[in-house]
Every structure is written in C-alpha cells, then in structure tokens.
Image 1 (cartoon, rainbow, N blue to C red):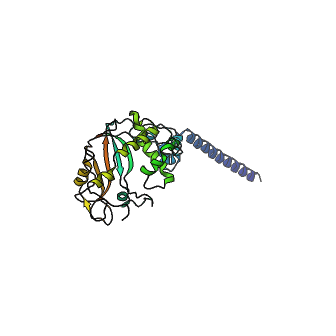
Image 2: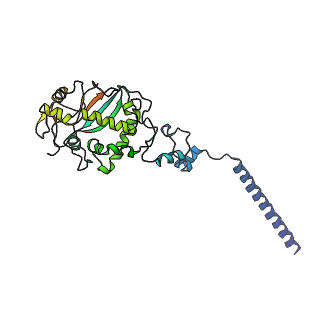
Length: 294
C-alpha cells in the first residue's frame, strides 16, 4: 500500500505539471494575438469583408472624401432637380441653336414615339447655348416650378411636345430642357428665368415657319420624292439669309436614303439669326421628307 500511495502521488504531480504547462502556453498565445494589429481595409476587401460593400465616391459626386450618406442623398434627389454637378456650368457660349424637329422623320426610326407624336408641322426640340468648342449645361441647381408655365402651357403642348411621352408627361421634357440648357442662358435678359426662357423661345420659333418656307419652294413631304440638302437649304434661304444646319437619319428601315429629322438655326444673344458653323449631319445627296401620314 505504501508503494501504491507513492505511485499515486507521483502521477498527480505529473498531471499537475502537464496542466500548468498547457495553461501557460494558452495564455502566451492569447497575448501574442492581442498584440497584433488589425487587418487593413484592403485585406478585408479581398476577403469579402466590409470594404467590399463600400463604394468609392467619384469626384463628380462630391469628391473622394464625401461621406457615405452623400450617395444616398443623390439617389433620393427630388425628380425636379438636376443631377449636379453633371454638365459644364462654367463653359462659355457665343450663340444659341434653335432646333426644330420634324416628327414624322424622327418617329420613322424611333420606336418609342407615342401615337400622337406625328405632326404636320415642325416643333421645337430646344434652344441651346452653344460654342464652337464647348457648350454650358446644368448651370443652376434650382427647383423646376412648372406652374410658372401655366399661361403658355397650351402653346407649349402644341409647339414644344415630347415625341416619346404622352401630353401629361411633357413637363419632364421641359424640365430637362430648362435644367440642361435654359439654366445657362441667364445672361440674356429675354431668357433670364423659367418663364422668359420658354416664352421667348416660342416667340422666336413662330418667326421661322419651316413648313411654309419649304412649301413656298415646292419642297413638300413625300414617301417617293427625295431632295438634296442643297435644295432644302436653298429653299430656306429665300426666307432666311443665314446658313442653317440640316440633320438627317441614315438608319431608317425600308428607306434607301437618309430621312430629314431636324433643321437648326443659329442665333446671337440678341436672338437674331447668324450663320451656323459646321456641316449638315447625316444627310446625303438624296433625302426623304416624310409626310405625317404615309
């Protein structure tokens, strides 16, 4: 029995020593781990950590140092405000382009045109501050108050329609034209302000009845007959001495020649006609001037 007690005592001492070494090793490893620096964001990104779900903010949306909530603010921006700072608010301009569009030509290739889009008269596309090398856009971040246009809304519906939206949604088209282009014309007294911009554009538009000018020279809509860009320009020169630019669409299914879509006038800051620079866009030797109803 005495020998058995000695063996038991030795065994307890051996177990105690083993446990002491084990706990000491565990404490040492824990301290070593706590003293190591935490992984960098770059490593987390590669491991699918939080950085992988954090988008960087480009300079166009407030700079690389913008707070994360900045992008949320942009996404929740009210629909009647432009996306800022998109565009070129500091670009200079020397003249305006008054673009009139021929809806039968545009809708011959535009599948999104609504049923009421085709008119038998030319309509306004826009009045755009322009320069030879750059053009300003989205110059003022301000609310679009459509009620200001109520006195001229009937004329806007008729002469400045959106071709791809029903009449109830024309305001979205006008809002875009104002925010992108009209907001940059504030240095011209006749265009300074929402109402003035649209009202003055309507007034200038009514001075240039393209349909009448072309008809006076026997250039009329047809599904068969074609006209050269020179013939169209010469017809307009009887009533407009200044050079205009003519725009055609070369990709109209079922047509073997480009289709007339726009005619652009150039105006100085007194809204008087001046010669347009540049060449015609997309027109060929033969061009269709399609009727509203074929």
